[in-house]
Length: 364
Image (cartoon, rainbow, N blue to C red):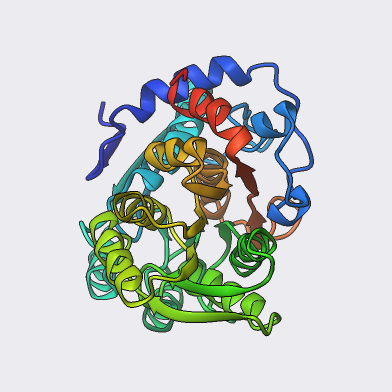
């Protein structure tokens, strides 16, 4: 029986999840609405750190109307971040199967972020018999009107991951990060405090038009604008590529040898920036997003100052659960909200070793 077909592999993250499941089995779970702003710029307690990525999920009491569902999910680009989301999806899939409900789904993305590629994938999916089509929006200006057309044609469409569609889009619901602007602002505020509210900084955004990347950059820019002794000297798009972020950081540092800080708005660019800063022996302070293993090692070494870690596992699990309800004809309300908010937790050097062990089974 074919359960899943998708382009990206889970690789070593599977083992990491199994280790983390064991480590988190009895961990207390705090307020699910807690976001980066609640950390207060301090290292997390052991209990808070374990709740940052919640592996302990159970299906709710909803009784599905069918015994088989077939979904289609497309996301921005093949990348370990979405592999982590897939692990949560697989957990929900297994739990539904235990109840006699079979869920199959396609989980597809291009090698590089592309709104044009996503447009074609959506048109292809529309021609097939999927119960729900889920989209991690590559570019809200381009993709949102397409989602409207799909809904108007009778398709059941949701968005998920870290990028919702534009305000007013007809998509049925969104599961993921609803506070990307605030994440960017919180990380930048931590950087400003570290730098004494003065100095030159650069922003590495990610993919042009990607709502999560653009929103974080907007939060960063608005925060910097509050402080007269701080200046943004470069804003560059790395297309969620470690190598591109590395090259861009080297150029920025060459043009601005007195650079004080770098704000990174996706999971790839903290790694690229840290490689460049280390190679050039720069003192630039890096803040950025998410849980890449190499980034966590740089955090542990003090090269990266802090990271905003999103709960990818919960995003995946909740996406499958809500897709089932949408497939059954339910709309946002008592069964699920229009927007399911997943948390971001800011972690610091003191947290890095424990997070490495929690997510990757790495003991330093």
